[in-house]
Length: 488
Ligand code: SIN
Image 1: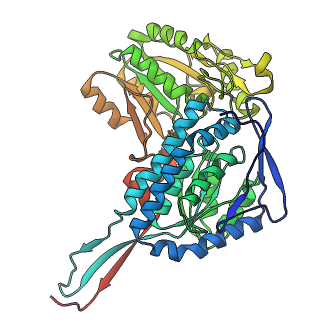
Image 2 (image 1 turned 180 degrees about the horizontal axis):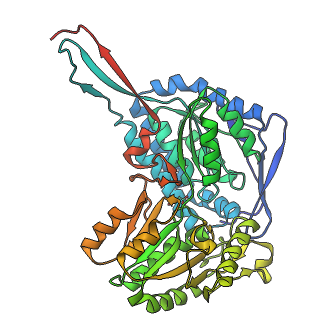
Image 3 (image 1 turned 45 degrees about the horizontal axis):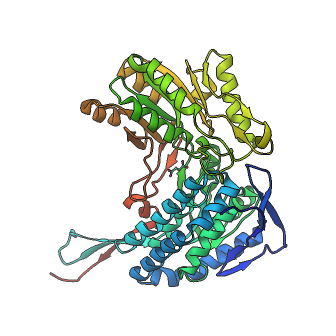
């Protein structure tokens, strides 16, 4: 299904789809063509406050609802997202750019968070702890933190939202969602599914705005908001940490990454090149978990680079709604500028171009923000690509000798989100997985994501975990209750 223009959306506040209080709207554009896809309200501070008030008003009833009833709403949301997959995917491709098959896969991935956390809603257990005095009872309760603000990114506009809303709703929290201004239409469709599944008014609220700073200011200064979950850059994450200090608000931060991708001499080359391509070129390289540094052991280096270059040269670039396209546009021209800056910097410092290496501007590419899938070799640590997140379809390869050298290079980063390696040696598999300083490790695969596992980083990649049984903990407070004089 192709989407051209006319997707008009609204804010969702307290169960009503409304315009901004001052009537302002902004256009959403297609990164493949520059065409307007639709529009959405440009919310003000008053709209954010109204959404927080709606979430606060809905909180008591939502947390008092039996867990099984909340769970049903989550599971029904997942069903509706799946039923509406084609429609949501078409809008996502139009505003975000990713190929339709990837967009449909993301809707499925997004639905899986609602379904999985539907299960978790029924398993929020407390504890009865042996008391010091046997006549007393010591209880540990797990209770919802309260109103949550979810600030979500443009690279996965559906899944990064449900990765927050799924556990928040399951825990009994109510939420205000602020999606990225590049991709608000997908967010609105996802929230329509949650609302149609029976979420009571105010349990989820949507505020869109071009002023991310104003939204952050309003959220952080409002005492009703007890928790903020953010996915985005490390730079913004640090700003949120500073802002959170004033009212000691809880944060979960899934920030930038700079994943090393190690290929040892004993790796299966077909599997390793396929894994690297899946990691690096998914969503045109615009993922926090994608390979950013590729380290290949010297015994297979040449064979690996040749095979990778051949495969990458065959990737089809184009608008995401065209069948057969593997790599869509980048989100905007700044994304293209950054990819090109990394490539030009590497070439000027002695890297060798294996394939790609340029902006795509001819013919149908002229109106969009496209960059050729690129492989560079002989990359060295002082090149930008070795320490800055590229967020584009560029793979830079470095040769290594020993396992120790590979680990040293891989761990030499301020980031610690995700790392990958390929080996057939079971002892190395465990040793290297333990020594990599990252929150997520992929072994013999380039794709690691699922609703049922904890996703998150160490170092400057953030803190907190999303997904898995750790995911719901982020939305629960622990309360200790001592009941004296109960008797033996
Ligand atoms: C991200 O990179 O931002 C999320 C990727 C994923 O969940 O697979």
